[in-house]
Picture 1 (tube, rainbow, N blue to C red):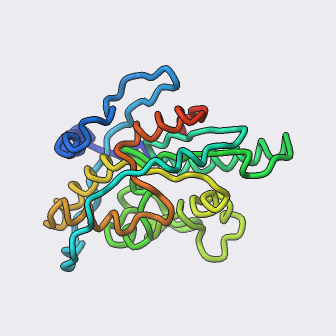
Picture 2 (picture 1 turned 90 degrees about the vertical axis):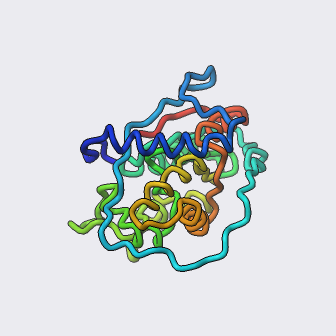
Length: 249
């Protein structure tokens, strides 16, 4: 997400942080402060702005999702010789995707190793949280306009998640996607706190309940991405599993 594309940031930031404060009690055991860490600093990202309101319809009735349960079994998969975690608190044109791909390719070119020897974890948190959702969410909530991201080679706002999969026929861009990286063994993690906060912002636009929108977002996570108590927890847990830290904004 481009920081310069976020006008009048102070009010949206208060709204977003207020949403996080509301749900933080549910994750009180999680270290969600922005302080430094001995294994690598995890700094806060700038503010978010509300998505465009206008003509987003209310949600159709749907049964509530089961209570969210967290799982860190992914950490047991971090067994390669080379390990890194890419922290993405803002989209920044998909820098985390590019960095993870370049890291894996670099070790492959230098040492002729296979993908299982080069572990990567991508943590999508704070302003980058739209990257965690599939095309249906991007289309419904006009997330291309929200993130100021246009379709490749077009002047139109993206109506799908361009970081998940490449556009049809885009063979060159297919490798630089979350889907392609996940198929190579990359672990994709998302921030539950940011998802809660984002649900609250979207709910204000549609007049739905924040819980209903949160359930909708959970139903439309991109394939293979797992929510964690917070993005900061995910980054720290990856470092405990031996990953070197790289901020990807």
